[in-house]
Length: 172
Ligand code: ADP
Ligand code: MG
Image (cartoon, rainbow, N blue to C red; front, top):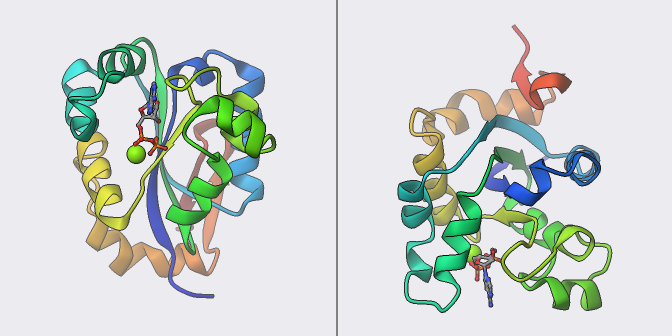
């Protein structure tokens, strides 16, 4: 097995409010063989949302996007897998919910996207984005140290899964 890659995912506010959708998405994450390296539930602040979506600052949907993203708790996840970035984006499906319903009905956004804004989940689009996004929401998490010290443990499955925390941790 090749080296694992980290990606950053968000289960957006309308998902954490919907237990059935939440459980199904968690099930998809686990059965797709992602390891959950970090997991926390948090209401994103306006300052965090503005930093996170800075590339969209001048888009027509920016206001409704940051308003929605700060409207209630999200689940913030650091996921690990070989090709995690691409695999997670494939599982999510197209950005726009109506396109997702049509073109990828079995994708996460196809199943759980309610609108172009409320499209269920986020996933980093590159390694550089993943690092930037992880730094915003898990500032104490050292990506380089993780690759150095923990990646081999996760890759070789020397981890335990804690269901109530939705988290894998290296065996001690
Ligand atoms: P992705 O999340 O697939 O990387 P983008 O980076 O283009 O997509 O957009 C960031 C987020 O902004 C999307 O996940 C979605 O919530 C919202 N968004 C994107 N395009 C639109 C749109 N046309 N109308 C409303 N919201 C949008
Ligand atoms: Mg994006």
